[in-house]
Length: 244
Image (tube, rainbow, N blue to C red; front, side, top):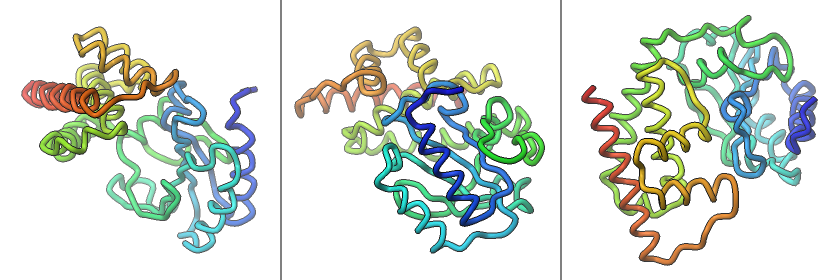
């Protein structure tokens, strides 16, 4: 049995969800599935399969009731109708960052479910949702790099924020493994790969401290230098991946 401090919240959420929505299944993916979850820092990425579209107000109220609980601010959940599970382009009602939105369940998430999805309630992912092919996974990763991350490197001020520095370099490291080997890796493995492939040591240390230790406080000049390192690394490695 897991001793993670997030387990009480997961149990409470599944119980509340069963009472309010009556899900077919509830699954965890992301770092919870890949074994690199850091309580209080990592998101709690969940999917709930439902027979029909849930009421938005009811879903919002359910999540807001959890707000006082530890780690509740990190809990995200998408609500997938059972008759829409096969379409990776379908957008689904999602609670994330404390509000409701709609977004698809990407091929990366679908592969996470296939290789390590954790079942919190109901049947396992393999019983309900088809895996994606290696070709479809690679196509999505390439499109994400070209359509989102590469254009983001044209905005220097974005990279002054911790979230861009944390996600950008790790995303390209994970993309490299997926494109070259057809597998998914955790953020921890991606960080080790960055360090082993010549990424600036100060950038790797900054990401590592924020994810696993205590982040260092940076002054304006240090933050600017870090932004330049992260942005240039992401741009150059995307260009190399897309050229390959």
